[in-house]
Each structure stands twice: as structure tokens, then as C-alpha cells.
Image (tube, rainbow, N blue to C red; front, side, top):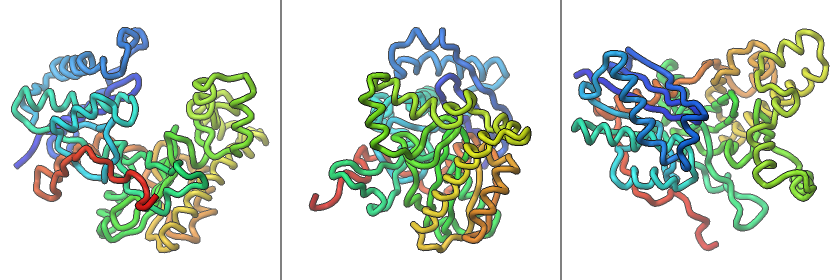
Length: 367
């Protein structure tokens, strides 16, 4: 049996939709939302009906009927920490998403929009590997301050899809493999996948890991404290400098790595040391993730938009090829990942998980 699947992926200023017949994409569109359009909504949750109407209009304008869709699948978000997989959108899951249990982000709208469609047309709705996936080992959570622990904030949807695609092509089982996956884009997550679980990674939200085109990454914390008390920044301004306007953007006024590579090609020595420094930090984190798996690594996979760069690939290969084979899978596959997760459940290859509303980790025993 073939299934028609609609994938919905809301972002800050856009909503991506893609329509699939099984795993074959037949239509896709990025729906752009202007600042003026979004400014009428006080909270992200208030955007739900507006974004749903945009999806309905786009489908109708392009000749596709929502009633012909068998499965609605969204990115997910706003949930309490859970293990990876495909989850049926229940009333509890949609309620938690509407409340943004882990903070406000447009991704939380996806499950609700999909559930609205599924309820209206008598179909089913899922989310796949939402941003709330947390499979960290306990030992990786430890920090030097009691009460402050490392959390899992990873590009989980693309990370998992890339790992699954690599394993399928290599004739391996994801549940039996050890991989380091480096998602390299505006945000960077470098993650240890061990036997089907993402056991360690840097934190792309709270701020750890290599610098990125827009994020500062690891910093000497005393100097950050000094900035915080300098009187030059409000809390929001400093947070934005570190997490939205840092990295390459802070150094060069652009987050486009291609522009930095052109500067390097033109002989700009400052551009070279800063850009190489970012790549060096990525390599160090990849090495750390290999250590998390005790050096037993089947492959190190480079993915995301930046992995199109030969300069980047050559640099990281020089630093990391002694650990394991370097595999380059450029780009992102989020929409394909959503459809694939839903399809695995519909075809009986994977069982849908149930969202319990209880976080998978809430502290150390005996603390």
C-alpha cells in the first residue's frame, strides 16, 4: 500500500511543507512569513491558526487536496525530554507542545497543525525525532557545579536521518553502529551515535561546542562574567551576541562561510586564522565524541550546508581521518526525515512511540 504524506516544518520566518508518495517527494514549498505578518501575534503559540491557514492555502493553490493525505507529520517541539523515534500526536503531546514545555519555538506548532488536519480528515499525525530528543549518557551530563547539568539540544532530526542513511548505504544496522555525525550549518552539533542512541553532543541552545557562523561556542567563563557585569549589555543583548550574533558574524559581519573562504583565497590572513580556528574546534569535538565511544568509530560523517565546502572537508579530513573513515553527506534532509519516520511506522517497520509527558532524565539518583 502506498501512503501520501504531508510534512510540516515551521521555522522562525517560514513554514516548509513537502508532500510525498511514500518516500518520493511530489511537491514542496517554503512559505515565507514577513515580520509584519508575524508582529500581530504576541506569542509563538498565537501563530498556529495563521500558519495552518497558510499551509491550507498553499496546498489548494497547487492543486493538492488535504483530504487525500493519509499521514500528517511534523517536526515537533515544546515537549519534555524523550528518546528518539516517531511519536503519534496525542492530546497530551499536542497540549504540551501548545504550552512550550521547554521554551517557545515555532517548531512546537507542527504537531498541533498536523493534529488539526488529522482530526478534521480522520487520518493520523506524527512527529519524528523532535528537538526534545535526549539520549545522553548520565556521565556526559556532569559539570563542575552541583545543580547545573548538561542537556541535550541537538539537530536530532537531521542527525538521526543522516545516520540511518549512512547505515542503509553501508549495509549496517544503526543499532549496531558507532558514528560521529557533524551537522555543520548556521548551528553546529557534533554528536556520538552509539548503537542507536545519541549518547553525547555539544549543546546548540544553551551554548557549548565549537564556534559556528552565528554562535560563540565555548568561551572562558570568567571573561563572559566580566562582559555580563560590564554594563554594556542587558541579559538579552549579551545572550543574542553569544547565541545569535557570535562566531563568524561577530568577526566579519557575515555568517556566510563562502564569503570567508573567498577572503582566504584572496590572501586575508585574519580570515584564515579565524575560519581555521572554527574548523579546528569542530575537529576537537569530533575527537571528543570518538572518545565517548572509546575510540570504536565506524565512520565520521560530515553533513549540513557547510559540508559542501572542499576547504572544510579537506581540513577536517586531515585532522580526523586517523580515527575513522570520513563520509561526506552534504545538505539537510529534514523533510525527507519526517516522511521516512512516518512511513516506517505506517509500513510496520517501526512501532510508534507514546509520549508520556515525563522527562527521560530528571536528575541523578541519590542527589
